[in-house]
Length: 148
Image (cartoon, rainbow, N blue to C red; front, side, top):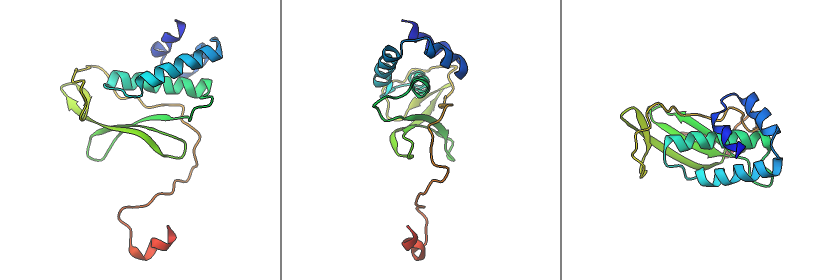
């Protein structure tokens, strides 16, 4: 199927052109099947494919499904974390990663294969979100509690 090419297209504009040439309903159904398959990713290769599927779904439209954004971050402790979140910053899925030789593996994951040469990808075409994000601090004073 021509849709498999989305994993080889790096540029978002090229990806958009490629998707515009596809029959939208078929393309969306194929992307949903890939999303469902990759949602429980087990390695960095599958994570990067999930990122590309989320980018493609952002371009083509999520239809009736809740749009999710695939994001990889390096936290202050140096560990990588990957997450899928909606436009309200609600995390639907999150995993921590550990280093293995020249690659990364999921903490508590079953796939211990070393995928050399893979770097964490994050979705580049982000979901529209509020520019202000309200959240509690775990380290707040009791006197400011009424403001929450």
